Length: 171
Image (cartoon, rainbow, N blue to C red):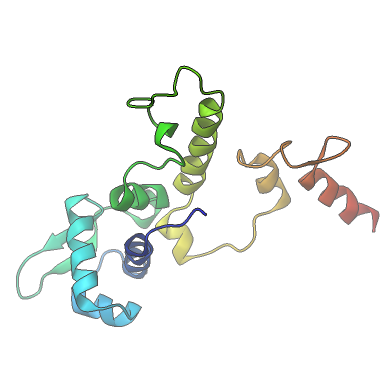
């Protein structure tokens, strides 16, 4: 099962909250209260996100945290990479260093391709998108998505989205 770590999920929730008012300074305590997470957890996340330059901190009595960049310039891939390291489904998705099977493995190129598609999909979703969701993707967006395609075909080679479109026009 593919799943983000709990702290990564929390980091995205915290950043999404801050993205609603990206120019404003946010106190860690008020962010924690708004997103209903423990203050120590939010404080730890904000420090980690500051070290990664996703968040900027301002010291002092009127200090706090704010996004270091526009919400449109911070992707989910950025956040996940900060919290969990490089995005890859397998150890060899980024490098074959240390893999004893690299000379005989027939599937590593596919894992690299799949991991790249996931990275690209996560890179296309920004904090701005999370703050202002646009709803379900259109059929044209689905058709252009690199992660979907002929691999999900029905007997005749027809893709799932072509079948869906054909069926929606015939009924």
